[in-house]
Length: 136
Image (cartoon, rainbow, N blue to C red; front, side, top):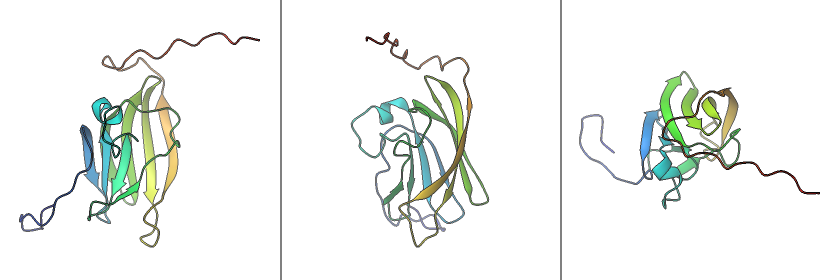
């Protein structure tokens, strides 16, 4: 971390293979990870998307609230209190918006929905498993 004047003031790890990083108006740090981070060995990267405070404390991850598991980030942006994270999966591309919870409750964020496009998969994405017929 650097001060507004450009001096180093602290350091911490945000995980591996960060594709996109953005800060919101409250100073939280949002990260979207690549496949090496999601499927690698760093526990903070495995959720695919995350929020951090300025002390480096992990304050949010999707924890199963995404429509499908991400393979990597595509973009990140903020719009007022909403943070938008674009990501892709085996199922297509998605745009997820989250409104951070008030500072009194830093461990949560309210998912505001996901917009998905189920188009051709990313060329680097591994092939999804082939569904097996149900056995009765």
